[in-house]
Length: 431
Image (tube, rainbow, N blue to C red; front, side, top):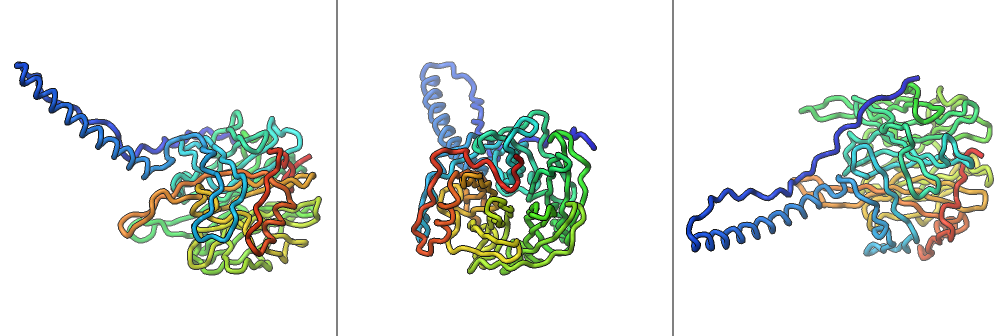
């Protein structure tokens, strides 16, 4: 076991400074000269103020939420994208996170829920910062909550929980292991090598595991899976009814984010450490390419549920919408025509609804924690676009969710639970 003592990197600097130029004019000796100098100074100051305002606006546009800021719940009011046939999802509310990089931008939540507090808290969330898609900050971080809406850093925890010098650490997936009483955190390492002209080239995707009894001291990470020469993303680990484990992943081959087709695979393990070779499962979301997923087994319903972020093949992985799928055996899956949340339904997810997670309660209530992105500045041939990442939460019911995704007319609005925070039990839950 080891206790981390690393210090986080500095907050990224502002792109543009708003400092005004200093006026170095000497003091006039005659009254008329003073008057002229005063008028001239006013003009210079006015011009400088206009310039500073323009620069400030530019900086805001370029960096968007690189600087820490409070979550803006008004930005999550439902909106229909022009040309969309989907009725807006009701009620997603913004969630704010104090990330170690200072940006507040996050992606890929994964929540474990306890009926009674574990080490002082009921809900634990593994998530990664992703400021304007900067992968160097994409390292697993830990947050806690009592209601699923408001999140903070647990006392004694130093984020990020792990780092790498070989690339970056993405796609965390966390579960409670009852036999050891430990939290188990899996995450994907994107291992790069130096390519042409010093540009990083993808070498392998590795899955690592670290464990903890108190969420403060974590074990030395152990590599449990590796896939060389292929993009194999979004590991999702599930406790199965036979008390074994399954690991679901998405194999995007050599093209990764631009793949025209992908496949969902499943590995099996008796101990969560030693895993079988991957086997493809039967999954088809007509017209879409699966990219990220979260799978859970629902004991109360005796079936598996999955939230799958998928994109239209020609558009790439940065345009995903979020779909629900269900299965009785975890191998053959039923998919549904309407997404849980489509890209563009709310302004903050105007570009993509990305990897998300959920919890199902005994009273049939459901909480969905989303991550997604909007475009801050469109890309051009000369400069890349700027994207901002945020998270949101919705409280609803299983009945309402299934009604929404089964609606072939795309006209049914997902209703919101009248008592937020009621969905606090899931397959990852511990009574």
